[in-house]
Structure formats: C-alpha cells, structure tokens
Length: 208
Image (tube, rainbow, N blue to C red):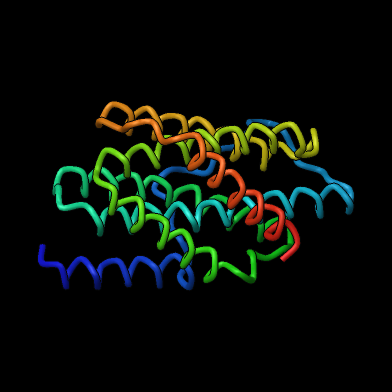
C-alpha cells in the first residue's frame, strides 16, 4: 500500500470514529437474567464513567491508526490494524450504553482523537519496539483505569459492569500481544507523563 493510500485510510478511520455509528463484530456483553434498575443519581454517575470509557476507545482508535501509519513494517501494521478493529467493539458497546443511559459522548472527542493520533505518530518515530512499548504501557494504564470503574460503578448497573469487565480482559490481551511482538519497556518519566495526560483527559471527559 502506498503512503498516500495509508494516509487516506487513516483519514477515513478518523471520520468513521468521530462521526459514524460504530458497529461491533461481537455481541455486547451481558449478565444473564440480571435486570439493570438505576436511580436517577446512579444513572448519571454511570453515564459519566461510561463517557470516559467511550473517550478512551476514541483515543485507542487514534493511537492504533497512527501507529499503523507510522510503521514501515507491514506485519506490524497489520497487528495495529487488527487491534484497532477489535477496539471498535468497545467503541460500539460504550456508545450504545451511553444512549441507553440517556446521555451523550464527550463534546471534545475531536480534540481527544487529534491528541492521541499525535502521540501515536510520535511513538512511531522512536521505532517499532518503542511503539509497541507505548501500547503495553497504555493498555496497562487502561486496565487499571477500568478496574477502578468496576469499583465505582453502581452495584446494580449490570449492563455497564459487564461491558467494562470484557473491555478490561481485552486490554490485558492487547498488552500481552504487544509484549510478544517485541515491545520494550518505556522509561519511568514517560510513563508518568502518560498517566498525567490520561488524568487530564478522564477528569475532563467525566463532565464534558
């Protein structure tokens, strides 16, 4: 695939992520025979957390698309593209759950996408192993973040909890795959900067 084709493919991915309805290939996780009944304040709290999770999936699409664009290795490019396709399930599930909770995605999604895309390109400039290391650290931080949401979601919100639990398992698998593909561990200051950036994003997306 020529560079121009990859560029237009990345642009198409951005437009689909931000403006099209995502379609999951897997069925949305559910807890059999458990009905979700939430009070008004529980619904608002759950919606805020799921909005943050939806933003995370918007960023995942941007990161993987940028890293696929940056690598010269066709095998690794396919790895990133496959991971992005798997993350589309999460994007669709969180979008659907937000609608069920009668709430909306973050108004700043284009900004989050642009920032994550830039980080993905930057990671790619440091080489494929560093780019894979960025995936590992990102997924580890996301996994911890999702666990915190499992701790904070209303106990009766079975629908949201089932989605977040499956997402957490998938993120752990993506980190393991990146390690197997040759990821290197990132320096501690880089990890700290990533955590700080994620904190800004999650705090803002909780409300906006």
